[in-house]
Length: 113
Image (tube, rainbow, N blue to C red; front, top):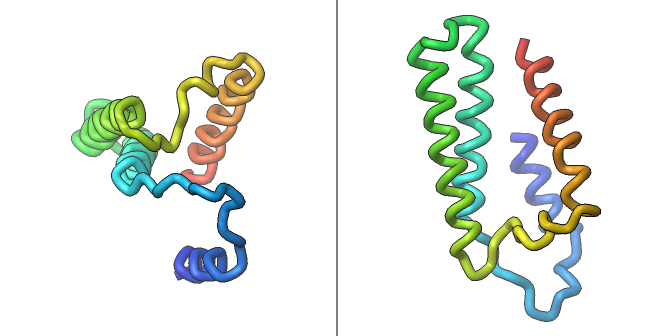
């Protein structure tokens, strides 16, 4: 419910992009990324309870990896990607990504216990 209120509030308060030709939202990419990270998080969370070889862990992690691969393929092929890989090739913009990713993963692991 909080997310719905925040989304409605953001639509009401946040001004439209200053870009005169804003890119369309990649709904397929958005769904794939949410499914990927949700499944991977669920798989990691289920490991302490059920073990690495449990169905929950394997299906969560495997499904998450497949969804992540589909997301990356989608981003490589779509006309308006959510993630532009050219920006990742620049050392100044790609270097900070790894610590942020580790920080988010660590926070997820700590909060899930």
